[in-house]
Length: 66
Image 1 (cartoon, rainbow, N blue to C red):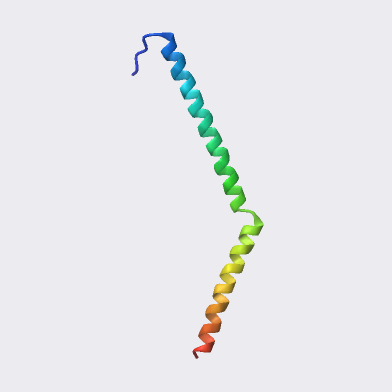
Image 2: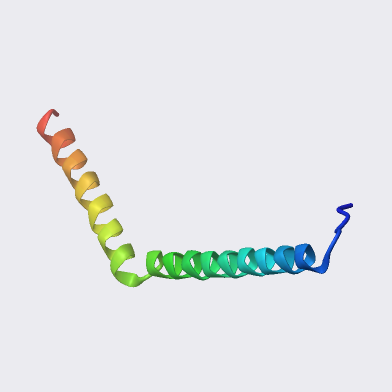
């Protein structure tokens, strides 16, 4: 346990902890926004198109070599 010698040290630690808490909250908000942006429909649509095009290309190659 930390021992304090003055109220100034206590206040400094409280301010530092408060700032660290605010930074952590902002990081959580940013992570939430990134997560919701990744779940948007346009991202899923582009993923489906990419997978379908790769699969279609694979099918064409398979038919070509048969």
